Length: 287
Figure 1 (spheres, rainbow, N blue to C red):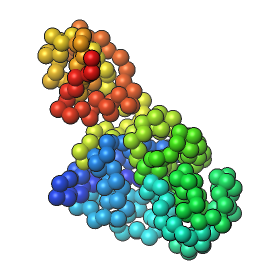
Figure 2 (figure 1 turned 90 degrees about the horizontal axis):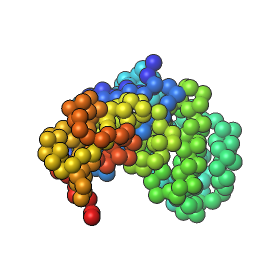
Figure 3 (figure 1 turned 90 degrees about the vertical axis):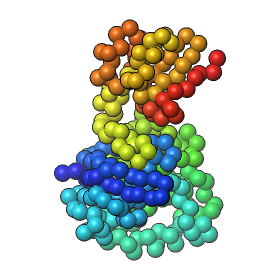
Figure 4 (figure 1 turned 180 degrees about the horizontal axis):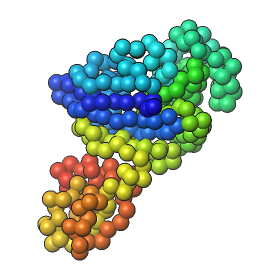
């Protein structure tokens, strides 16, 4: 059974629309949710969790329709939005004391084990913590009521590389038992290369692709050729850069056979996103 199923999720604002976004996540995996700023990642997550009212679609968690079982679903959910920035002048132990009241399955021993693991002093106030320690505290709260699904919105944004790597190690340990899964949105692609099993990519509110990391990368190729060849291949390119010698561009792997005279190479996650997001499908490289 999937821990999470999102089906045809839609939400419209005056200047932005989320259009029929669908994906699923099985137990025991980490899914990276990617797209440039403004692509709709946060809108998707908030619509999933009824933090904003969706216009269409459905969400199931652990087999339960979210709308009909919201309280029960949230009992099994750990959720973080970026840096923990609430109750800045309150002590951590006070925040934990309030938080535990909302969860029947709160585990004090587990909570304190995470405080020890993260070297967090619960007598400190939120505004006495660094950005990295605030995220770790939020993570300790999220992990301490035996949730099965974790949804993190930009949890590593603004953290230094060492703090990010530390958190990614925690993410991997969370799913090791094969019972729990993580969905986390990020624009830091290097984080995904380290820990993600699946990628869901949206652009301008629409789903581009949702699949395992290797299949995602194998769905695209980077090709290069002369400026003359560019004219013949331009219509197939998802994005490209021109340079003094010709061009380099991104193409769907299935279209590679239609470009016999070009050099080609595998595309990594960062290259795929960079080329796919090119404005007007064209950028002239600086000479």
